[in-house]
Length: 119
Image (cartoon, rainbow, N blue to C red; front, side):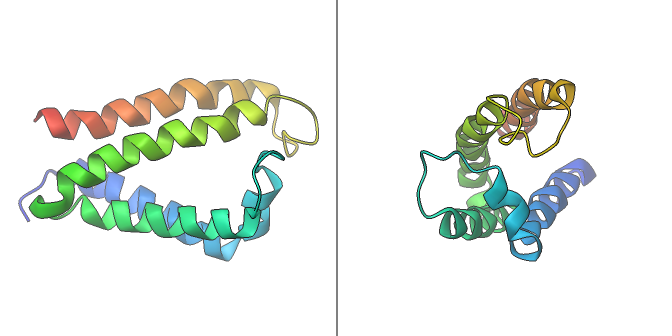
C-alpha cells in the first residue's frame, strides 16, 4: 500500500462517518427525507457502504470502484442536504448558512475522490 497520506485521511473520514451511522442512528434518521421509507435500514446500509468504500480506497484492486462509489454516494446524499433546506424540522436545528455551505462541500468531496482516479 503505497498511497499518499491524504488518501488515508479520506479513508478515515469515510470509515468514521460510517461508524457514526451505528453510534448515532437517530441523528441520521432525523434528517432523512420523508419521501424515503425504511429510514433505519437506509441509515445502517449507508453506514456499511461508507465503511466499505473507505476501506476499498486502500487497495489497488478496489480503489477505482470505491472512488466511483463515493462519488455516487455523495450525489445521493445531496438529496438529504437539499431536503434539510426545506424547513425548520428538516434542518434538525442546523443553521441555514451551514446547510447551504454543505452543498458545495459535497462537490469538493466528489472532486477530492475523483482526483485519485486522475492520478
